[in-house]
Length: 266
Image (cartoon, rainbow, N blue to C red; front, top):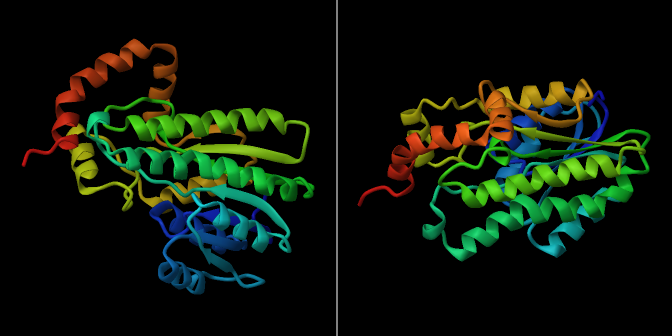
C-alpha cells in the first residue's frame, strides 16, 4: 500500500513517534489529518510539514471524550480517508500499589478505549475504499508483562488483542489491520526515570524517526498482523509466549533495579 496521495488520520500527532510519523508520511506524499490535544504544537506541526497536494488539516481534541471523537468523524466525512493510525497513548512507571486510580483510568481510556471507539466510528468510511488500513501503534510491552508497567501493559495487551480480532473480522474486506509494537523509544512519553532505568539495565531505546521509517516500510510492504520492532525484543516476545518461566526468571533478577527507579528514594 503506497501512502502517496492517500488521506491518513494520525492521532497523537505531536508526540515523539507521532511527530516523526507525520513528517515521514508527509515526505512520502500523504495528505494528513492530524489529531492531538496541544493546539499550539499541532498547528506548528501542521504548517511545518511538507505538502505534496492538498494542505494538511489538524484538530485539537481529547480522544477520551465522546464529543471529540464525533468531531474527528465529522471532519473525516468529506475526506477520502483510507488509513487510520491510532497512535495516541500515555504511560507511567509505577508499581500498581503506587498508581493513582485516575492514572489507571486515563491509561485505559487513551491507550485502549479511545482507539477501539474511534475505529468503530470510522470503519464504515474505511470500508467504502477499495483498500484501507487500520494501524494500531502498540508496544513490545503488549506482549511482555513488565514490572512497573502493569497498567500500561494491560492496556497494550488489550490493543494487541483488539487488533488481532479486528484483522480476522475484516479478512474478507478491503480493510487490513496492522499492529506495530515498538520497543522503548526516546520520546517525552518516557520520563527521566524510565530513561535512567533503561540505561542501568542496558535496554536499547530507538530514535522516533527510526521507528517511523520502519512503520512506513511495513505499510508499503503490506504487512499485516503484529510487527515487533527491535532486536532482541522481537525474540523476547516469542520466548515469553512459549517459555514464560524464562522471562519470569530474567525479570526477577532485574527487579531490584526496576524497583529502585519505580520507587525512587526521597
